[in-house]
Amino acid sequence: MASKGKLQAILLGAAAWASCVAATGDTSLTAADRRAVVDDLGRTIEANYVFADKAKTVTATLRAHLDKGDYDDAGDKEALASELTRDLIAASNDLHFFVGVDPGFVADHAARKDPVLAEALRAKERRAEERENFGFTDLRILDGNIAYVGLSHFADPELGYDAAAAAMRFIENSDAVIYDLRYNNGGTLEMAQLLASQLFRGDKDQELFDYYYLEDGKRVERGQWVLPALPAKRLTGKPVYILTGSTSFSAAEWFAYSLKKLGRATLVGARTAGGAHPVDRKPVGADFFVQVPIGQIKDPVDGGDFEGRGVTPDHEVPSADALIVAQRLALADIARADPAKQAEVDWFAPLLGAPATLAPATLKAIAGQYEGRRIDIVDGKLLYTWRERFRLQLAPLGGDLFAVEGVRDFRFRIVRKAGRVTALERINRDGTTQTYARD
Image 1 (cartoon, rainbow, N blue to C red):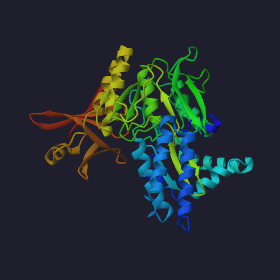
Image 2: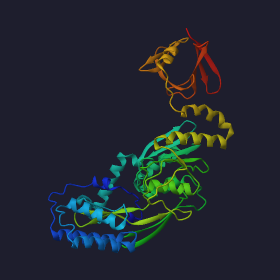
Image 3: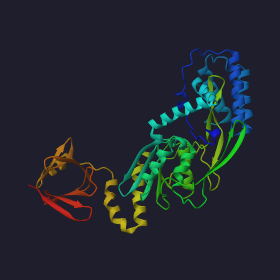
Image 4: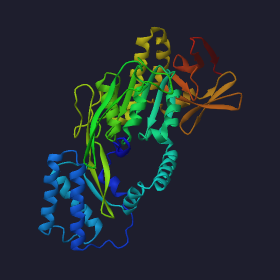
């Protein structure tokens, strides 16, 4: 949390916060209850809202609504929270505001002042993060020695450092890296800092993020820089691609935006959500909380941000197509950097085309026996069998070329003469071939 020097840049929408609402038993409210909530909410906003000049105007508007009786019909806590959220957004034109009901959160917030209870809550948080592998959902080496890192969120590195270190070591020998943030809703900016540091030299000062935030009325200014020591080798000079989508939010957007501004990454996918301002969750009374924007982050190049606009990718494509496009671009980058790898790039390029489909008549023409092996039609697909026990599916790559399921070192080509299938040709990655005549 910000009070520990860690800027939690998690910007969730009202629907997500609403899912946190706990059962509260008797939720009825009196006029005195409503006034107490509005007064406490006003004090909390004035102490924490990033735009101090607007804070007093916003809270005065809420009190005016209260005095006019606009909240008289809000007979329970959920109804009052909904009306307060509506009026906060209308008064501030800031979609980050949200008021909810969650007495469990309020109790936990108070418990953090007790070291023993705080440690128990931290342990609970760690267990929850462990179940999500600290946000690292997928680590792979794609064809062409391209590392792929799938991230659902940026975990607190105090909890997820070991997972991050393992991921960084896993990708350290790749020729390019793709970070998939299409479905990443944000998280802790310090994890973004740790991962981004692997992409830069460690002996040269480089700022990644510049920001300030309010913590209960105190202004805190910080900058985050490339870390001088890392648990893995750096990927300096290696091509970097970041996949984005409309659900890329907050810290995920900042990771993409700053690396793009610094010329260190190419963005592929759809425009992001546009949640640049960090927020925090503050207790209001015994049962309510308010999600309030507490700061501003600026990029290290020209001090800009993307609030309300989102981050525009370098290659704007539907998010569902972003990975294939990024792979093609990365392979081209690898070949340009090292012409000796052009043959390898050419070998994998057909795998990144649109999936081909074959007509039933074409499948039937290919099926048959080929010198100790055979091809059958199973569920509308071609199944290659040899030695009567090994079976792998064939995937059409276009024309008469087929990839073999799980195999990267060879593929097959159908040989035709006078329109008839006469042989199965194995094409090895080193350029050699073997031909199996059709029986």
